[in-house]
Image 1 (tube, rainbow, N blue to C red):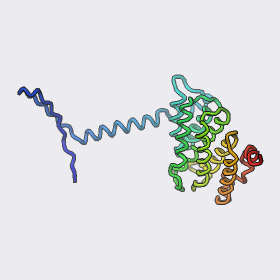
Image 2: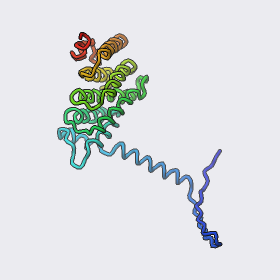
Image 3: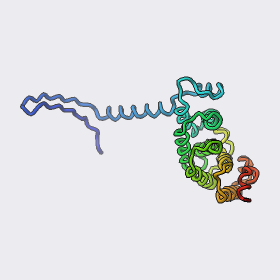
Image 4: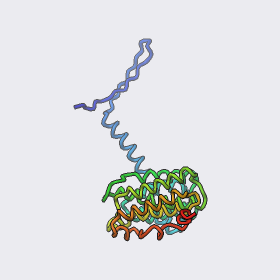
Length: 256
């Protein structure tokens, strides 16, 4: 077994013979503890810079950005709350504020829109395949926030063609691969991964960039999900049949 030893700092003078020597012992355990506390405090402060009352005030004030605050930096902070098991933090604050700033107020910079879009795309794969765990919250609410990004893209393009088409493909793959199909949970409240991905696909489909092949792929993906999901899950997630949830643009693309 290795044991932590004291480390020494030694200062030596010139080689001329005058050699003042200073030795100071510092317990290695103190060094390790100090580094740990520094990085722990940095992570905590980055993740929870604002408290619940702060977000409540923003919602109460019609989603206005407080003075001396940055919508871009707060959006990054809110993104971290999408995985929270607390439904108020996740749904009432993070999702509600983000979708308002993304789509209705257009408050976020292009760099932040791209950064959040790519972060949420990656989150669709985080813990994918798990069932009955809280990891689904991050995936589900990332899909929901991506639906706001897709609606923003249809209104005023910012993604670029490549990122848009990648997102269409990733949304279809996620809908097929998600195994946690819970709708409402007594403690977590709405989970709704299937419904949130349906919102994302509907927003993506309502865009002139959508190709005929992508339209067909979306309809096929939904049909597969309907065939594999239990009936109770389909009702809970508000999906009855593809035509009821997809915009007319999909049907028009397929018939022209």
